[in-house]
Image (tube, rainbow, N blue to C red; front, top):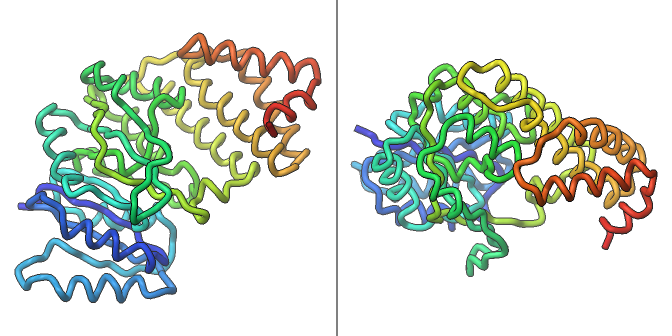
Length: 329
């Protein structure tokens, strides 16, 4: 019986696939299936995967390739979920690297802790060969909390203290019954899907793990590098959907003022990008949204509360040139 399904969307990843496929082959886990969804690639991605699978032993059915017309990462992950047979579900991207124990340790942790979701730390690298680390999502402080509730997860997520990187998570597959990623959402779709799943699952058990087995490749074509200030309007829409779901949920007990942290953060990020991209229209929209929500927000930390109040004070005084100067420098 397959213990875990690893779902990997693939789109024009011919250059990075050899690294990923080599890492998949080195995985120390047993009873794992790797479902690769070729999402309308126009390069040699599909052929590279096909050739790789042909070289595997006749009895090795753990590598699966599914072709579909290009519909985006969310649709590809949904296809993977429909085909997944494992007790657990994990995600990876086709342009990243994996440690040999990536799958084994994720499964080991979720079974040991008897959780519904286990979330791991993550290394951000700028080179696929050397795996040179430029930053890290480190959950060491949160791991000391032990098992956290759905309310805790939403509270920390909305304060940007934990994140929704899909490749940091392992889920019980049962959580995804009747659920999927929204193909109409092109940015923060994972954050939305995970939050709605948590909000809709009473008694959910989650643990944040300090260990790191995934290397997230940051390159010039990364979605976050190409993000525009206008794109962040979709982030605001996603955050508002999460807030509505959390307030409606009977299993989530977080005040709306605490949930609003995510909106102040999104509007500030929009403001920063509008300055960097010299978009005055977007700057005015972001300023208006930030000032509206900052007064209706309770922050998780004193440091963040002070920071946001100072930013708001400068904007209220119409000292936009001071704010812009600080952002540029």
